Each structure stands twice: as structure tokens, then as C-alpha cells.
Length: 317
Image (cartoon, rainbow, N blue to C red; front, side):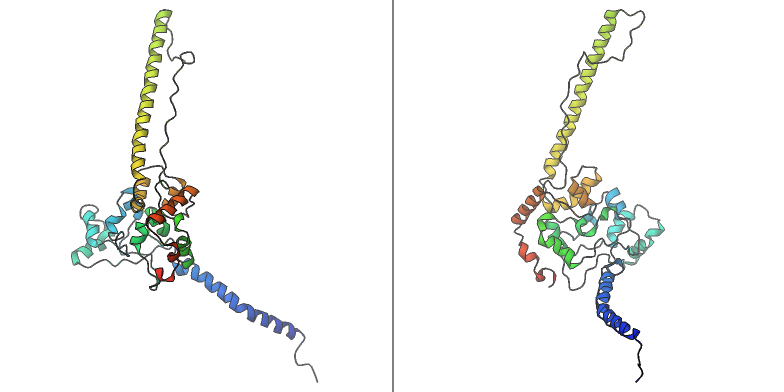
């Protein structure tokens, strides 16, 4: 009987079986990749809003406190968005004719609230409480990124379960600590007195000036330089003492207070620690051993049950 299939059919059959076995794995890989990409999570994607709003302008440039607009962030699970009345408390007096703010003015005149497109949206089966995270000293930027630098607000994180559990597993690495964010002022170097023998005068002896008169003028100039040096050092020490007093007051703030003060420190040009700069930039923090130990003290002070933080009930209620 003649052969029905060619010999190459055996190779094709084997390849088909191999491809068939690989297809679910390939499908799972591509499905997982797409589900974690910005196309699905919307991370880094700015959403069109009824009126343009720049966090960078309002928070960083003008120094408006987050709580002026997000009034319930300290006491409610939801941070809330500002009402039209909140917007108009300023814009009834400034930028009153801007076409960009026409939707806000229309909302105020008609008594109809603006419908903002929610940027950071969690699945309905996930429970999240802003107030408890703020109260324990978790920086807004830990979840929302460097929001104070955003011209157009976008989602900074994909909010995957694995990402949330990173913090819930070791919360001591992510909590605000007394000295973890603000850099201690640097004390000015000890004043080194000017030495007369090494000091070079700026004066030039005149043709009719006696050596005695010239030496006297040089001595007076040196004495003035010494006095000026003392004044500059005293001025630097006074500034240092003022900065140190402010620093010592700031590190006494509660973790909750430090969450919002971090923006004010940054706007005012205060020097932050490397960890503080990471926090303000929305980058993963790299706490040192001292920061971790202080974080553990915060956990102990507020009686945070670490084991309970990994319980399903914490986020799925």
C-alpha cells in the first residue's frame, strides 16, 4: 500500500504538539504582561479632566497644603476631591476670566458639581483607608509618586497586591521617623583667627607717606578685617542656632504631621536626608539601620500588629 503521508509529516506533527503545549504558557505570559502594562493599569497615564489642574503650581510653587483641597484625608478612608466652592475661594478673585477655568465658573453658577475623572482607582473588592496610613506616617508620595511635581496628575503605581504587601510585610522601612527625613543643620567650622604675619594688605604705600604712617594704616586695616571675620562668624553661628532650633522642633512632630511638613520643608529649600529626597521624589526609599530601628519604635508605640497586616481581611472586607 502506498504511503499516504510524507516523512516530513512526522516532524510537523511533533512541532504541532510542542507548539500546542507551549501555547498556554505563551498566552499566560502575554496576558500577564498586558495586564501589568500601563495600557491596563493606567500607571503614568494622565487623564483628561473637566478643568486643568497642576499640583506642581498649587502645591510646590504656591505652597498650598494638601489638606486645603483633600479635606478628609486625615479622618476618612477617602481623601476626597475639592468642591467647586473650594476652587472658587481663590478663583473668584484671581484668573477670573481664564477660559481654562470656565467649567469651574459654570459649575459654581449652576450649582452642579464638577465630575472629576478618578486617577487612582482601586478594584471594588479592595478596601483602603487613607486616614490610617497618614496617621502612621506613610508619605503620600509612597503611593502617589512625586505628586507635588505633576503638571498633569497621573497614577504613579499599578497598585498590585505584591506591591502593597512589600510595605505590609516590613512597615518599619516605610514609616516617617523623627530624624529620617530632615537633615540636621551643619555647624559652621571653627573660626581660624587671622595671623598678622601671613596677612597681606591691600594698601599701597604712597610716595609722600612715611613708613610709620603706612604701618599704622595697615594695622588699622588688619584690625578691621579681624572684626569683620568675627561678625561673619557670629552671623553664621546665629543662623545655625536658628536652624538647629527649627530642626529640633520639627523632629518632635508626629509621623502624621511630618507627612505634610515634608512638602513645606522641600518648598522652603530645607536640606533633606537622602531618604527624604527619595520620599519627595516618589522613589523607593532606602532606610538605614537607624531609620529601621526608629520605624520599629513607631510600630511599638502605635501597637501595629505586623502579622495582621498580611491578613486578607485588612484589604478585602
